[in-house]
Length: 287
Length: 312
Image (tube, chains in turn cyan, blue):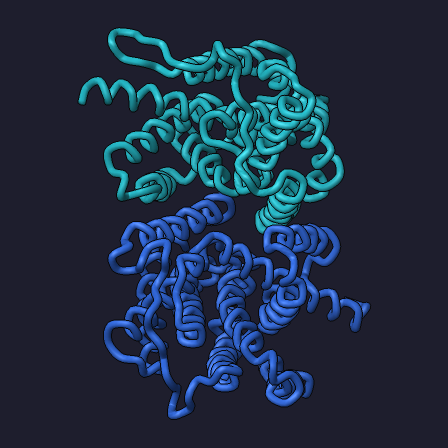
């Protein structure tokens, strides 16, 4: 029982890290521009398919495809931001929702068209397979790798936002956009870069997710809910909040599947609704 | 209320809904599906178009109505009108319970919350497979007739039944919209903080309209059950909530006829393109959605109104 508890905690943590990567971009962009981007997981899907294509068609090694997943998703998010999203910054939540649901539908159909609706696979290299024995407990190597990558990215992200001039601009724009504009910060440009960064991280998350949860065109809708839960629970614009929420969600989802399999995802949705009712702005939301 | 006068165009429209009986008798099943979808969209219009409550989980009420009607027909009796009523009551009770939560929130939190509640109900039905049949759905029952008319293969009775219920619910909605209560709802939609200031009990109004919309959505669900003799988990899915939202926005929210026009266009188009895989069908829906948001902010009816009256 105790051994399995450690296993559940480990798997849940790895899963939580994945959710964090997928959702951190949305937290920042939603907190910054109040733009309800339901198409965030479509960016993740773009990253996932970029990795699959590069590995299976061009024969790239797995690790080399990861930066490309980041770049592909980042470029796409810049393109969408420039062409569609920016026109709707001042529109209602409903319009933003509808536009981005439309993009989700388009992306789901487009990927089904080009890649069929079957599960895609991207076999990881030999050194990431198997598992490591620590204190009589075996841990999957890939999940250790996933956790390490995510923690490294989190550290870089926190340093970027807390210690650099660019980070100061982002924080200023999140806290008070008008004031930031008044101080001469180019909020639009800052936002575009942040948006690309967030989309890129989602793409990276999508690429890393293939091994753990698979990849098919329904990914954009299936994980949207999880991402929204992380954002809603963590609070807008709070990286620490997203991190905590993602870990909490990952572990409780794994524990729920392990200990109460008959409940399915019911528990997760219940926790989400209860938390939203208790704190509509999220656990760490400020505004 | 001058606005409440029946316009000639409205009479023409409702007379035109009788045309499928003579013009396209082979498409009556489709016509009944359209009427059901239109009723569902109408119920969403009451809360979204008039009261400004954005809901991404409206299918919860549709599905609860569908399952209630299905369970009654399977285990108790097959008289449809009482089943319809029971379904309306069941989803109304759920709607009233949830309305206490929903009216407290606005904007993003409201969208997330309705999404969460919708998923919660869907997942609950999935888990309670002993009652609902889980992923297999509810089957093995058949509603033989409604007020003496047998359900036939061509769907004549089904369409007449669905159309009659749609028309009744439409008249009720129309009455509600043109009442002082309807005016208060529009006031809340336009300015949620000012309405309480002039003495309108905003939250009570919102709870009331949310419950009414839930009842109507439940009735729409029950109609689907009665005319198709199956209930699937899909009636509760996020896809259905999103579809009805698309339909309403496509037609034009806050116009009563928006949902009906949207349902006709959407369902006929889907039927015509049914040869292509449903996955690809969503590509066009997505494109349509983007186009409507970008170029037709008030839907098709809004665009037409603007076209016919350029001054507004």
